[in-house]
Length: 353
Ligand code: MRU
Image (tube, rainbow, N blue to C red; front, side, top):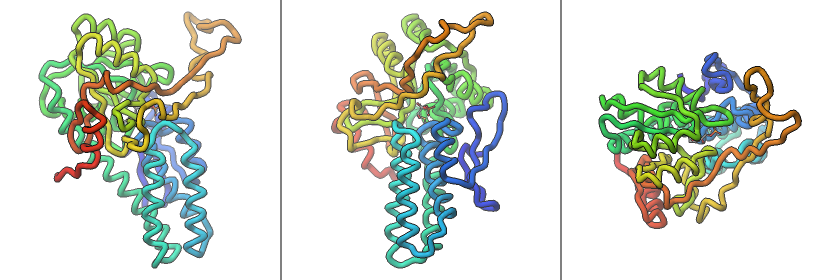
């Protein structure tokens, strides 16, 4: 099943509840866009493309919930709902991208259609975003898999697989494609503190695909790179600026530094919907800081692993400067430095499938 899916029989949104994995595979059902927004904030659904698709269907729910009869009033309800949904998480640009794409579409219907035509157009566009995501991820995977050699050991950070997208995945999708092509690969899975997307979600997905892996602590990556025991690093992105700076899960920057220092290729896998050409550099990307409770509360040998009353900081993302990135893999091909010229060219290029 898909991570994010519209149920046409019940007109509800269904999403895998990622907080419960790997213990339980449970599908959460939504019929209120405010609850979808809460689910994005609480990380029932997470990963930039999955968040974008969820927000799109959230807007379709908002259209369904609105009692507006006139197209203009429905449109203004949609703008209000989109603004509400946009606030759920700040870093992944796919959220805003998907909502704005749908709102743009609605302007065309406004001139000649009824409120119900508008409702249908919103759902159709949300569905298109979801369907395109899967197709785009497979195109990315074909480009990226060419960079993987038989026998490679690959370090991967966070979760960028089917769970982080509608289906298939970005960086993990590249790894999966290489495996399906018959290449013998091994993945070192960063556990990804504090929410353990690597240990919980990536390791769970790799088990399903039959790809061999070992979980490593985030701070062990440098050891394997320095020992020559990893040949490549693949990560995803939540927002990539015009100069190629990549915002991704906290810890990506430290991983990129250690990778660069050891002369190992470091690839960011980025659908063009995650590239924000309006931002000149990564310093302009809003970075989400989450509740300190996600960092605190660990136990060690049955006792709290920190003094009672300790406080914590919890930035959810960091920015990796473009100088540390070997290539940015998109559905239109791979962009190489200088990114200032090459990224925009690749983003705007329409690849003939
Ligand atoms: O906080 P999360 O789990 O939503 O963070 C996810 C990531 O950082 C992923 O690497 C990114 O969204 C790319 S996923 C295709």
